[in-house]
Image (spheres, rainbow, N blue to C red):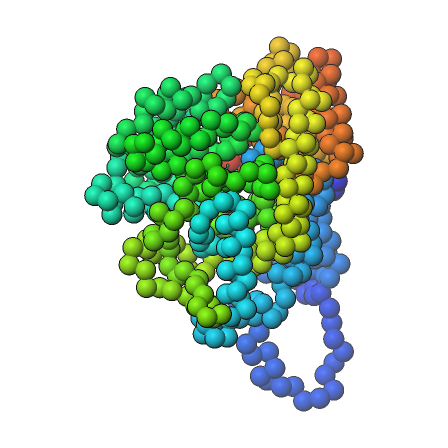
Length: 484
Ligand SMILES: *Cc1c(COP(=O)(O)O)cnc(C)c1O
């Protein structure tokens, strides 16, 4: 995030005849076939011709315009943008594990299958569930898979049912997944504590409802402490409880969704288990189920007999494949390395620190930023811009100004039930020092809102790109420096 000089497009610094390097003249006969098979392009008009220095500096400068979790604090709520140990990248890149054709015969990939099975077993233990599929490629993909399992069950019992209940505090992917699976979404209003209202649930829960999708802790960071009673209400009408477990660093090692009567949940290995989240993947969204839904899991299922692992495709009730091959193997390897390194006590500590860090921020900024729901929170906390609005300052201005302090802004305007939301998830990997930097910046911005609101309304001031017209930037992006 340094304020670098204006960087043109690489095409604009091109000049004919420049090359990155030059070799001495050939002193042996030229081999006409030497370049065969290399990805050489002769056919692009105006292909950039630049020196080695130019190409190196160009891409290094572009990389400096990025913000990343290796650079600093990244409090993007609901996203778990945490630092991930580099050693796990190394482990997941070992040639003996990854230089394997996905269609290699089972006898040659016993080790790989064993690692996947081990991860499945560990995830069962961590979640308190009975079986896991590792196939889904992301959280939302896991949600869709989970809903397909529920649909398959109901279908097999005569009626796929019509509705899925989703609280208004849910992550946005939940209603989309239920809808794509053919269900009509009914919203459940939160109560004044920001949790599911039991009365509202009782009213809506009928035998036409296939499932309740619940995020726990919800997007306010609040634990649904009535979860067992919620599950009883849903089960009494033959419905399933789907739990969105994307943010398991709020629970892991302390409590288990399986023990809360949850029937099916997805996890985000990217987020909780040592794969960075964001940047387009690859991710992994395993789905864990109770016995009742196991027959419907996607094929192939990894099974073990007499110490040999094999892929079972012969599962008549299966919903079929949800991903080519077996899912994102390297992400699984990183998760396995991470879980085995931390062990049960380490996972518990991960969760405790995630919760502690979030509460440290909540307590430090309480009274300075407005808290609509002042319930105890777990891994994230949601403030609003209500106090700063008195000076005409919105959450957008606050977020833009944070850029000037060299910090990534939190998630804003979500969840929708908090107007002007600032949703902060520090994660367990932040030090006290980094948390304090953020808290001090937020306090300074509040002072600026009172003393010099114009400074905030026009922020950011020291970044490479200044305040954008957000609509135009999305609809009509200008990718060149020259003003048209
Ligand atoms: C991140 C997240 C998702 C979606 O996961 P993707 O991998 O981005 O599809 C779903 N629910 C919650 C609560 C999340 O935080």
